[in-house]
Image (cartoon, rainbow, N blue to C red; front, side):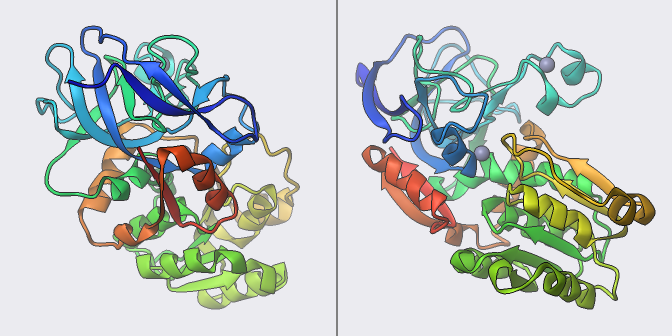
Length: 367
Ligand SMILES: [Zn+2]
Ligand SMILES: [Zn+2]
């Protein structure tokens, strides 16, 4: 029997420490699933939300849109996205976004990530109203009947899987849009968890030289990117833009990178990413998750006369989550080394801090 209440780390006011609160476990409706959270990933977006920079967030809010856990209770029969029967005790991941399944983006354009009715656990669903437990920084999460779940079989560390649910899924979405051809030089700006997936996915797609740009304080992240398959790294704070452009051109027969991913979230990096893009190349922007203002780019020089394709990448859908999970489970890349910090639920604020200071490659809250 589960306890009558569950603890959760609640964002009650922006920038303040998260508050540990108790919520009642509400009875499930038909098709709903309650999951005992084993691991909740701390995403860069969580830091933006904590700081009050994400316009989607209501307060109070249980943070945590990256979760892995064990099925605690199911009301009625429930299958995962592969039509496997779910039972109490099963290890599961869930798609963090719930889309309507009825609008033009869901049904006609087949772009559920753009569904205007999309709501996300731990981001856009507050905890003021029952069933309260809608974020992963909690002992339990109460999933709606239309949530997409994936059962994971075998002995896997839940902490290693959390990155697949957001950073990995968004990277899979960006890779889908990138159309990497064998041998294409790839550049990634911003060595966070998303970059680790971008590097590994690019390797899978037969990319040529892969470079990752980051700062000296992100040295541990850059080293991790190399273990994932990056060929070279560049320190942003020890080089000028001209140095970096020259270094990338040197690796690419003078062209620049065929495929560039801006994964740092900074507007300056967007402008730099466009400049690095080779003629007839693609510059993708999966890293911008909050309003960052306008970016000055030389439209003539760096886009129009180079036939550069600029591609926005907004969140991800369940297909991308499945692709990222499969990549982690393939064990072809050292995703287990990505988890550098683990925190108990009552130290979740500390987890946000190490991510904000970029000390962690991946920090995980273990409720
Ligand atoms: Zn929709
Ligand atoms: Zn995220």
